[in-house]
Length: 339
Ligand code: NAD
Image (cartoon, rainbow, N blue to C red):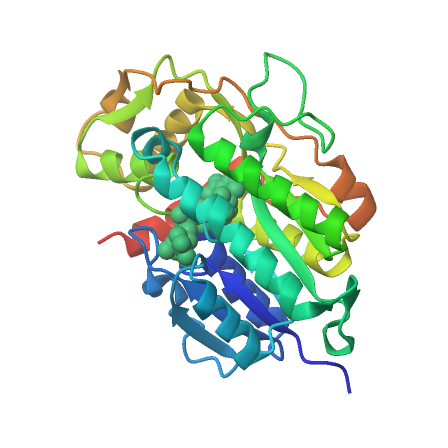
C-alpha cells in the first residue's frame, strides 16, 4: 500500500492557498491536508467552504512561528510534506510596517524548515525511513529578482535584488530554504511566481480594488503614471504549476512560474472597465471615467516579467488562461460574490 500523503499547507485560508487546497483535494481526494493558518486580516475561512467538510481536510488556527504548535502538528499528524504559502503578502503594508513581514516570512519559514528537518531526518543527514521522499515546497515570488527595464525576463539564475521589505523578506526565506537543502540535504523546492489574480483574492490587491471601486462608483486609484508592468498569472494555472513542481520537480530546484501575461496597471484597469461596461453597464458613460492617478508607491519596481521555460520544458506546464479569459472568470466570481 502506498504511503499516505499528509501535507501541512500553511496560509491555506488566504488567496492562493485556499484555491490550491480546493484544487488539490479535488484531484487527490485520498491525500490528507492539514491547513495551519493564523487567520490574520488576510485569512478568511469562507474561502474554504467547498472543502471544510472533506474527510481529509483539517483546519488549525495558529502561527507558523509557534515552535511548540508546529512541532506538535508534525508529530500528531505525521506530516510528510510542507507547502508554505503563509506570509504577509502586501507590498504596501511592508512599507508601513515591515516588522511582521520579517517575523512571518523569515522567522516563520525558518521555524517550519527547522522542524521539518528535525522531524524527518536523523543524524547524520539521512531521512528517517517513514519520511523518505518528504518534501518542503516554498511558495515565493518573482519580486525577489528586483526590477527590469523595458526588456529582459527573470530566469531562475537571475541574481536576487529585492527592493521592498516584502520582497527582501521573501528573498531571505528562499535563501534559508536553499541552505537547508545544501547543508542538510532537506528535499526542498522553490517556485517563484508572478502576480496572481482570480477568485478569493483579498480586497487590498490591485484587481479586486479596481473591480470594487468601479462597481461602487468610487475613483479607481492607479499608482504614478500607470505604466508599471507585471506578469499576470491566473490562480488556477498557478495551482497546476505548484502541483506539478511539488510532485515532479527535482529536489533543490527552483522553478519560475509566469502567465505570459505582461500588462501595465493602466492597461489592466482599462480591460476590467471594458469588461464591466459590457456586463454591467452604467446608466451613462464608462467605468474608465472613474480612473484616477495617485501618488506612486515609494520604490515602486517598474517591470517584472518571467521566463517560465524551465517549468514548461522540464515539467510540461503551461498557462491555460490568457488575461482575457482569466479576467472573465475572475469578474464572474466577483460579480456573484461581492457583498
Ligand atoms: P494572502 O495574504 O492572501 O494569504 C496569506 C495567508 O497566510 C492568510 O490566510 C494569513 O492568515 C496567513 N498567515 C499570515 N501570517 C501567518 C502566520 N504567521 N502563521 C500562519 N498563517 C499566517 O497571500 P496570497 O496572495 O495567497 O499569497 C500566498 C503566498 O504566495 C505568499 O507566500 C506570497 O508571498 C506568495 N505569492 C503571492 C503572489 C500573489 O500575487 N498573490 C505572487 C507571488 C507569490
